[in-house]
View 1 (cartoon, helix red, strand yellow):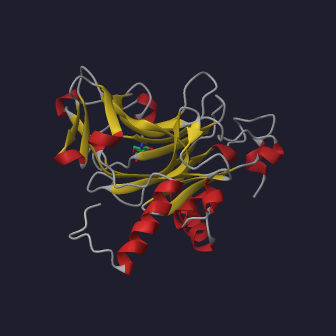
View 2 (view 1 turned 135 degrees about the horizontal axis):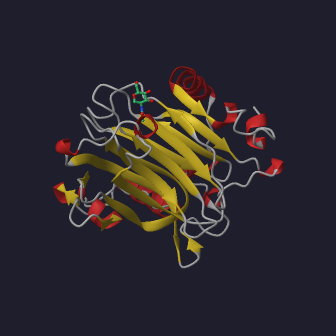
View 3 (view 1 turned 90 degrees about the vertical axis):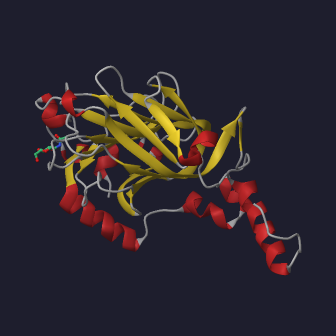
Length: 296
Ligand SMILES: *[C@@H]1O[C@H](CO)[C@@H](O)[C@H](O)[C@H]1NC(C)=O
């Protein structure tokens, strides 16, 4: 933070102290991909550009590519703007997710399944708790996600995992531990993203294959923002009592849930754009739907 002069006007003192409060609470800084992520695979197909403001992943017949956050997080509100592979993206998958390590890992997924030009992408979401997933919900989008950047957000606090697109909540996975449903809350997670070929299943269940004559396929990222509790050597930047203890403005996400207006918008999305919901798939669960599906 560079001020033009050092004069400590009251306004500046206030600004500085509120910045201090934010940094005590959680790490909320405008993203820079050089600082925040490592391109982990793809042999040069993942690139950080524009002084760290832009990242591109590409896929060709030889390889896809991917990156991961340097930090691990235990709760937070994480935003990323993504512009998906344009044109004929059939067979490609752009995955953007949070995940911990190991066989009983937790995971919060956005996956974008490509399609033929003019056919809609499928946005696939899932939540794993301690290694168990099977909680897929899929959506179409109400815009063309390849024309421009759109913001995909995960708000993860002890009571909710809220998936949002351009600030519109599309899914709210609630903490239902009281009903015996495991909820991700003990394992720190890293952010991962990758672009890869999945033409054995991704588009119309694998019927439409990747057209390699259109390669390289490119997805672009910008506007990364993690207002989140950073986990490092067994301690959280939010403190042992959790974020609520700090009482700072920026802890709003710690107690956030989908408000009445958000509920209405989420219903609009779910009514008009949801194409698969595990909670409605009674054939898949002959023994009965999972407990979190049986509550409002
Ligand atoms: C691709 O488009 C077809 C036709 O509209 C649709 O059935 C399918 O769900 C779309 N998405 C994927 C990933 O196949």
